[in-house]
Amino acid sequence: MPAAPGNPDADAEQATVTATAHNSVSVVVPAWNSERRDELARCLAAIQGQTQAPDQTIVVVDHNPELLAWAGEAFPALEVVANAHERGVVGARNTGVELAQGEIVVLTDDDTEADPEWIENLTSCFEDPNVVGVTGELLPNWAGAEPLWFPPEFYWVFGCSYTGLPTEIAPVRNPIAANMAVRAEILREIGGFRQGVAPREIRYRGTVIAGGHALEDTELGIRIGRRWPEMSWLYQPHATVRHMVTAEQSTLGYLIRRSFEEGASKAQLAQTMGAQDGLSSERRYVTSVLPRGFAGGVLDSLRGDRDGVLRAGAIGVGIVASGLGFLIGVLARARRPGR
Image 1 (cartoon, helix red, strand yellow):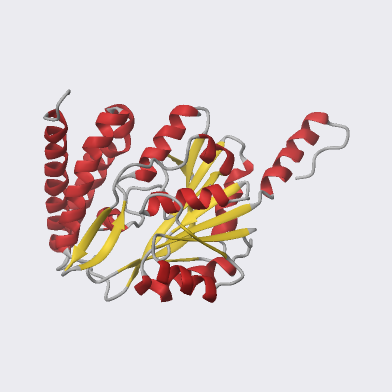
Image 2 (cartoon, helix red, strand yellow):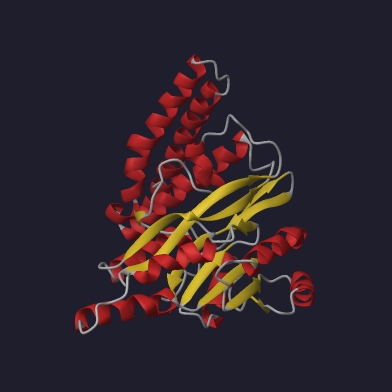
């Protein structure tokens, strides 16, 4: 709505909205796996086809000279650079942040495909000057048949939005790094993602099917929240990307492995960041979201859904695995010398 003529306060308010509505945008895409060239090409094509075109797209190749050479030739109009820091997605993201020229840094992964309005819907939230960052919806892009037994409450194990997240724009504690936007100035001032943590790898029959760091996005969100408590993160469910989920990730074994790792990582996070911040979102998830999901699976089975009881069982297995990981993580840190 136009500001009323002769009203200084309204004029100032309109100027603020206009300025923030046209923030320049840099998109950072880490890439590490030469076998995911097709996925990277689709990811970049979707970024270039946005209704709000990015001002800069940076592809950061993580210590893979072969992929770096290929990407440089395949995408000459984009900035293709090598990870200048430690191996892993944290170093790659921080490399991209350092090169970003936009006022807003948007991050995603090389195996995602964004909806055309993705950037537009993310950046629209920055019209509010008290918003520090935005995280969007990640839908699973199944490489094979969708496993109907897999509980949506555990979609986070392969980096997707899960049951329990808001269905409308709402504040959240932290972002999901595969679909997030943050003010560049604040991201640099806080020092970017925390480095010095060795990247993990999850293998299936000798092949790496997932890699990354434990809760680097959660830790970043908490640090920024502590530094700027008056600012907030938002979840924007209309800023959607589809995240590749391989057949190997759609297994019970993968759910157990990731749940265990998550529990161990949450134990470390709680002890380094404090239980109040480190476990604030998890309390509601464990006490409300998971029991409802378990009960819903049982009820679905009683209504004739043969996969309902399997979903309920998978939730139970995931709870046990994550709880065991948390307990072992707490005990391991308690036994360290000097503690």
